[in-house]
Each structure stands twice: as C-alpha cells, then as structure tokens.
Amino acid sequence: MWNKAQELGCNYIATGHYAKTEYSEKYGRWILKKSNAGKKDQSYVLWNIPKELLEHIIFPLADFNSKDEIRAIAKKSNLKIANKPDSEDICFIPDGNYKRFLENNSDLKPKEGNIVNSKGEVLGKHNGLYNYTIGQRKGLGISYKEPLFVIGFNKENNEVIVGVKDEIYKNEMYVTDINLLLIDELKEKMNVNVKTRYSTNEELATIEKVDNDLIKVVFENPVPRITPGQSAVFYIDDIVLGGGKII
Image (cartoon, rainbow, N blue to C red; front, side, top):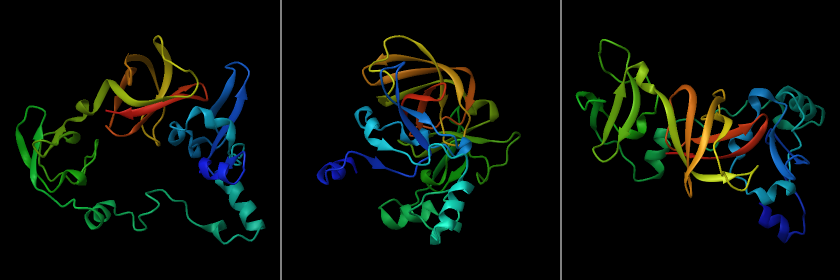
C-alpha cells in the first residue's frame, strides 16, 4: 500500500484500524499506540509494521471510543454499510467455516491419527490436525476422569496431544520474526506487558534476547493457551514496543 502511495506521489496512507501513531519526544521517534477504543483496539495486529513507515500512516479512528460513533457518522453520511454486522471471524470466509475453506482451496485433506496424552498414551482418534486448536476442550470425543484440553501437536507422528487443565498453562515461551518499533535493539532484560492473542488480556512478563531473531518471554504468572503461530505483542503502557511470532 505504501509503495503504491509513493507511485502516486502521496505522503501518507490511511486505514480504518483502531490504533494511533504519534511522534514521541520522550523516545525521539514515531510510535504506535493503542487507540481509545478499548476492546476494539487493533494495535495488537499491527506490530509488524516497518518502523520507518509509522510517520506515514494515519489512523482516522484513533480517538473514537466505540464503533457506535463510527456507525452514527456512516448513517449520517447515508453509507450503506452503516448497519453492517461486525466481522468477528476470518473476513474472506463468509460462512466462517475455515476447515471447509482449507479443504476446498488446498491439498489439505482429513488424515486420521491418534490423540495422545503428554506421556504418549493413546486416548482416542482425531480426524485431521487442522480440526483442533490449542486450548480446545469440546469435540474431542474422549471419556476421561478429568476434562481434557488440546495442549499441542506432534506433526511428524500426526498426533493431537491433550492434557488436563493445569497442562494448558505455561510460564515461558519463545518468540521469533521479531519487529521492534520503540527501540532498535533489545540489549537487556525488560519488564513489559505481553498479549498472546487478540482477545486476551495483557500479562506481566520479562523479555530477553537469546539469539539474533529470538526472544525469551518469562511470565510473572502462568498463562493458558499459548499457541505457536500466534502473535506475541509487547507493550510499555499503551505503546507497542514490538512483537513477533510464538514458536
């Protein structure tokens, strides 16, 4: 989008995300911040913006508190989408059935395998790894003395790994594909707030660089449902320090 803007001789691009950019005298750079929209804030999904583009991005919705305000403006302007329902799922899959979408648009097909516990004991059968997600409890089809949750996958053996509630909590994780916005390099341990999913609360943690593109995150309190592939975003107050992908 920015490349196209440059072709057209434009200095800025704008999107409808609930987020905010501004110049910080304290940090001597442009920063990405949370918007005023509370739970609708979308700074979490924007952590991988190249830092040099921040000064060229405008978020017109930054200072609005709710989507109701935006809908009112749209209605006043006679825009047809004023009453369009919120998109809570994958926007390009109209019926929300991502499993069927994957089967119809790739060579991915159901492949039966074992459901095992953390000791490797077989407890049941699954119908394809992509039908399960970390933290899932329902739909496992297993009778057990305690509720079971998906805690991981063994792709090589085509296994879904399940465990009891305590096993879905972790004290630490590793993050790669790092993009730092507030600083140029993580030189020492830092205390930050970490968000591991768009819909979850931030958690207190320390972050530490352990390799060129690898950060270790240690939580103050155990965190449930940490999922490889999800984004981990680091905050200092309401400012996005940076983020990466959980491995």
